[in-house]
Length: 400
Image 1 (cartoon, rainbow, N blue to C red):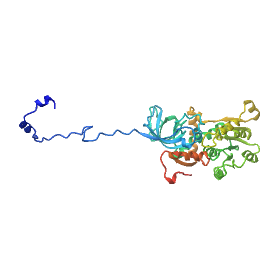
Image 2: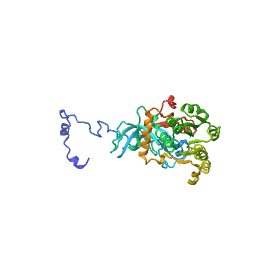
Image 3: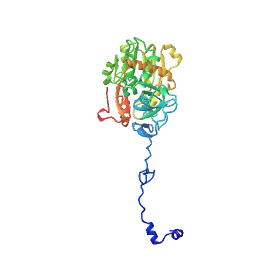
Image 4: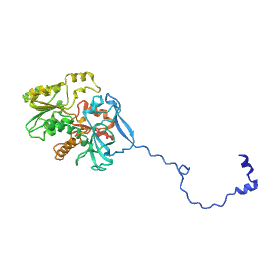
């Protein structure tokens, strides 16, 4: 106590009198003050977060991991935010994991070229979408997440009755198959087509699209265990590429060859494809699957593929009366009007019941390694799909 406080103190008797409590007076109730002892201070709301699959580096299956990302979706003008329900796994994603796909930014990066989900929010200027719309999305990368923000012109309304899994299996495979068959291949009645990897995502889409044209003969390469499915789907002549020379098998049935070859393989198979063409035939190359021989990049396989890569000049083409076309959907991201026109045609075919995505299996994000293995080891028949939420044990692999 300071000296000034001591001088001001009252005598003891007066002090006792002053210490008697005054009569209680009713006091109005006061709301508890923030930070007072009457109520705890409110806890700040946690920052929103969502899960994403992230490629942490190039290499094996373990390089793709589930990670948490913070922040709420905030679409900019011309964009929309989407709650993702299903994502498509494509061959380009396998190449990207090994560092063999040049359209993917360097890691760490979220892969994923296609997904489907529900619109959560709209940015300024978006008038052709509404909150709650079910849409499918096509992008260069970044879609393997629970929540994404994308340009509205990269989204397409899902047809009535289409599931999210089907929508995630629709855009990449069917756009690719349609454009190589009809825009480049100019497929017409009574022609013949050779489809490699015929039981895969693009292969099954191409088979269905071929069946929309009258009397098309389809040759399809796949392992023997998939031949029954191929026959049921409309493949005229399934060929086991593992035990047979597919060139010889095609020549036995059609000595002059075929009108169109769809080539996702690259290397020496592209040369074989060109030689299998009839006069006025068309070869469309759209991949280099021969580069994938294991979990990680194989320099020997790369060297062999590039060494055997087909090459021909314009003057040589004159003598052959054949066409060679190259297709890469990843370089079409600026052609939104062209892509939208193709999607409109595909949606019409879906609504007519002429095409329907074949789903091989559905895997939760946590099992992305198993999903990639399923596709890379060519065990799939149709599309491999990823979903953000965990699945029940009995439905980890749903086959249609």
